Every structure is written in structure tokens, then in C-alpha cells.
Length: 171
Image (cartoon, rainbow, N blue to C red):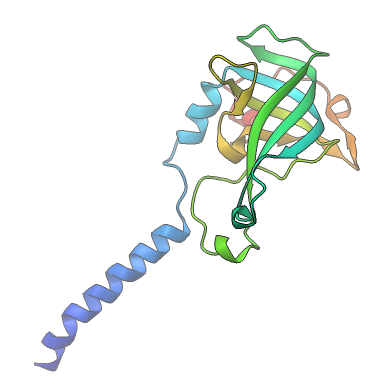
């Protein structure tokens, strides 16, 4: 009799535990990052020149939005016709998990906190009717080439980064 009374509580506890675990492990569905990377319009090697925080209120310490200015070192793929040597501006963000309001954050992979001098491969998409870009695949949009504070792109070599090759896409 007592066992029958406790059974609904065990089910409730099991469902709650499953829900909590699924939140902790939440990511995009399998294959979503790969699809976002393959459908990106721009694949560029960039060196960050300047990073400007765009949401400066005290309540926005968890999710921090940035505008990033970068120099294009190499163009792997471009549908916009941009070329090496040009400057580009794109939007990014960072989730400050150390902030109290971010405890328990669940979502896609967080982009790195970029700083001037950061260098790497970046997957971007143009923002319609502007000259700006957005990251294409959340935190998976970046492959860091910074080595000891300098751009290591030319140290690694500029191999052809085939967008269909998962090894080069860091996925």
C-alpha cells in the first residue's frame, strides 16, 4: 500500500531529474552546427582590430553584445566579393557565466570573448541591407589561430579550408 502511494512521487522526481539533466546538456540538435557552417556565406581569416560592447546597462552583464572590427587576412569563401586587406564589421556576443544572473545558462556554444589581436577563421553571414555581418554558427563560428599573442595563420599554413571537410570546420 505504501509503495503504491510513493510511486507517483518517484515518477515525478524522475521526470524532474530528466528535465534538469536535459537543460544542463542543452545544445543544438545533432547536425545543426554542421548545417549552419556549410550554409555560411563568408569564410574568412580575420585579425580583430577593435571590439566595442553595444549593451552597456548593468542588467546586461550575463549576455554581452559586441561589434567587432577586423582586418581580412585571407578569403576562403565569399559570396559578397570581399577581399583580403579590407576591413569588416560583425556582431558577436559573449555569455558571462560567472555573473550571478547567468547561473544555469542553457543554449548553443558560446562564442569566444574576442580582443584586439585575436586571429582566426570565422564563418559569417551578411546582414541584409547593411555592410555588417553576423556569426553563422554561434560559438562554432570561430577557429582560433592566435599563438603566443600573434596570428599563427601563416605558421599553420593557409591550407584550402574545404567547407565540406569537418576536420577543417572544427565540428
